[in-house]
Picture 1 (cartoon, rainbow, N blue to C red):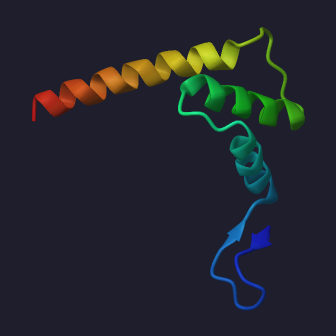
Picture 2: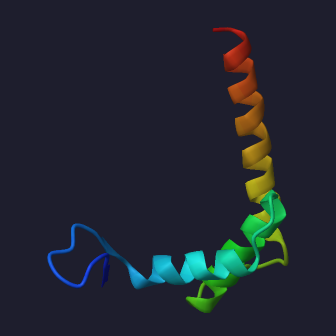
Picture 3: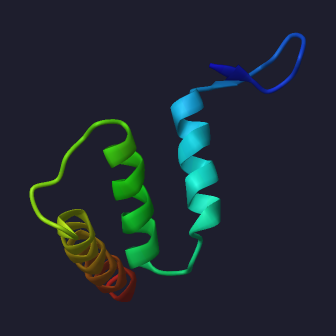
Length: 78
């Protein structure tokens, strides 16, 4: 864990999360593909393996698409 201050910190962040944010900053783009590719690279670095290339990206894009559809639908009916 990494503290937010040298003395009496009020927050400690896991180093893996900080590494993820650092990787994300290198690949930042306003799209789902960049986010998914960054997450996949991060997880591969931690030893997780994916059976097919771009599997995470495709699955995440589908989830994100339907989340947005549901969100817009609910906004229209409120």
